[in-house]
Length: 128
Image (tube, rainbow, N blue to C red; front, side):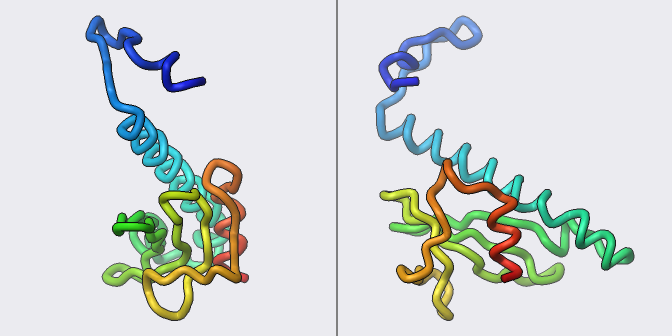
């Protein structure tokens, strides 16, 4: 659906009007949230089968940390710390593996593109 088809549509009897950049940002945020949820759920069965006494939602939580140019896609490492797993270029939508330093993408290791890759793929690649 094109941006102009959305602009000015009624939602709960109020007219919604947003700029193109605000709309793009909102859609991107929703896509990231969906990807994180898919990634989280993709690992649930294996984790709960192997670690009966641990809380998957706490010990393997996923989060997105927005930076100036990138969005870091992190996974919890136990209950108190986080590890960088992937990094999303906000301008291109390309997801990379990270280099050994947090927040630095590895341009030689492209994972896929936001909107085309699934959380199941991220889960598989995270363990690879």
